[in-house]
Length: 360
Image (cartoon, rainbow, N blue to C red; front, side, top):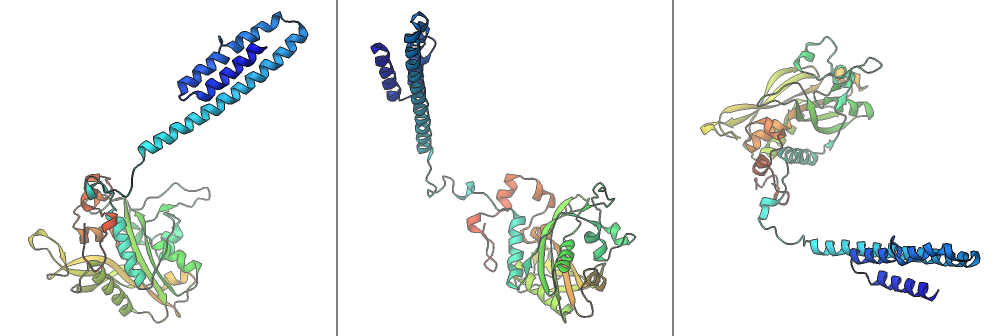
């Protein structure tokens, strides 16, 4: 009996003093292993009288439970100590400068940067940002925008059609962000003043077109709105975005099914020496489409065209980013090439501020 108590106490000391997992495992084997002293004591129970066997078995089981609990507690403590030691060894001072300076910093993608620049400009004019789903139904993407099933304008957009739903309706990947204008007008009463940035999809691919691209559109609905207001908004936007007061603009008559009258907007530029400079020279560059919201679009949205009027405009974010920052190929925006991103991207802590030039 005395030997069992002494051996149990010795095992408890070995467990408590173990400083490494290997030492703890050896203490377990010495006590509870197949050749351990406790296993040997359990084998001797068969030679005892029934009453003595009962008492000795209860004692051995109590010792086994106590040692197992001590082993589990010590194992957990050693694991915690190992984790804490690793954390202490791998700790980094995030306030220290990088070894290679800004070269190791991540970059903001030009698309994200330009979206922020554009929305900042229009937010200062009182516009709010609106969003909508990338997968649209026929009504919001076409019909409500005065593009009925047989309308030739549907042939102007290479649409990605999804398989028909159970009710027969065929959903599409939105071909423009204009459906968000429809959702906004149908969900709330005018006046409205929104900009809608987002992804759009068309089946096209070359240096200036990709199957997925980014657009931003604007919508203003109010009383007594006219083309002069549209022109004023776009002039102020171009001056702020291209950071020059020398921008000249011209509005050319055009056609869009959702606006009447419609106009393409050009800005003056120079292409001397193969370098594009906005706000200089006598050449012209198309940047966006615009017009007064068609009365049928207002009617589809439950807006009385005799009381409310408005204008809308839309442009490609990718395209205008190419113009401002001299990026020659649209496809590179989506190649995920870190070398390209380091060249054209923006360091988060050194983002250009409108009106102060571009700093990379």
